Amino acid sequence: MTDRVALAFSGGLDTTVCVPLLEEEYGYDEVIGVTVDVGQPAAEFAEAEATAEALELDHHVVDARAAFAEQCLDAVQANATYQGYPLGTALARPVIAAEILAVAEDEDCDAVAHGCTGKGNDQLRFEAVWRTSDLEVIAPVRELGLTREWEIDYAAERDLPVEGGDEGTWSIDTNLWSRSVEGGDLEHPEHVPGTEIYAWTDDPDGDTETVEIGFEAGTPVSLDGETLAPVALIETLNELAGSYGVGRSDLMEDRMLGLKVRENYEHPAATTLLAAHEGLEGLVLTQEERQFKTHVDQQWAQKAYEGLLDAPLVDALEAFLAATNERVTGTVTIRFEGGQARVVGRESEYATYSASAASFDTAAVGDIEQADATGVAKYHGFQSRLANGAGVAADDTADDQTLAADGGGGVTTEDDGTTDTTEE
Ligand code: ARG
Image 1: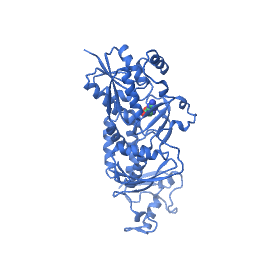
Image 2: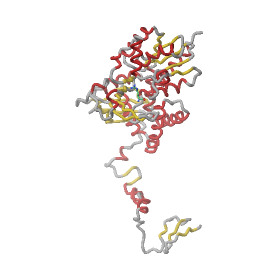
Image 3: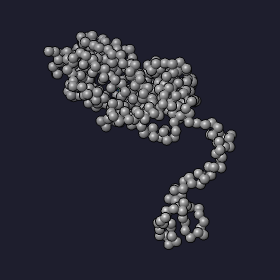
Image 4: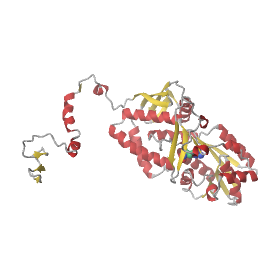
């Protein structure tokens, strides 16, 4: 019987050196390379194909863009960012892992492998999916303690097809939702990068453009009145918003293992759709829904970062997200301006808003007069006044300051300062 392993394969240095290592160090007879399309640039597939061919690798390419794009739009319902990062890599990894597992099972593999190091988040996200199966999980780079330098030497020795220069100065991960750039000179947090790190965004040049994003139940569905499928919507906005310099971030990110890393990201579509969604929520949701939802959103984003969206907690969070997003239907006007996607208008049939009630031009709201707010205003800050020793403006000729005005049980402060609980 042949022992087979399915490898998450990109054609980059890490996964290329994994191929001979899986055979020689781990004793597999056959390695199957799986590249999953979550919206990487065409050049990455060309590299993967060429490398696979040179390695005589059985290479599978799986198109998961539609499923991934839907996952990204679900994240919009949770306004999901982690420390300012819209989670592109994090959301993609479980999708990729599931596709690789499916190929591994179809091809009767005994194991699945990835080329992640022992320092990052992706090893955890891949393995959380893979360890739901009985297949063996192999992480050669981590298990053999490989460094980049060792890999470069090994590849040269074996004449492996890696174009050293192609990998460049930085480590870059690109998919539909975000492009991340790390490593090299960016490892110095004080280093100010030049524009050469950007591929999706231009420097803002003072031009502006206004677009309308349509939402149905919290999901963005249209651009300027035209219904677009998730992949097309995201791709179109990456291009358009990116041309106005929207969606750049430079963050110190706390990884799951505790390491901090300096990350630069580009995410024009994500920034636009997240801003629009939050703008529409502002019109539709009640104050208490909005406030509570910030906690739910943050928890959802945390689990997404961890690659653990299958956690039972997430089902519960998603029930809340679905309930609150039910009314998030309408249109948001966004202006690309100065590198920002700014909400400049919003409308919904579910608005929790009354123009006449809020207007400065009307004296009353139905039978509620302005003067009705006087009582509320008198009580507002009551406890703070007491706590700050301002006391209560009461009749100071009275013997008792009775705070319980209902005549029922209450607390009475006696002249001598002692406290007496009165009974009914
Ligand atoms: N820090 C991000 C994450 O963990 C992105 C990492 C992307 N990897 C890269 N080689 N640039 O989700």
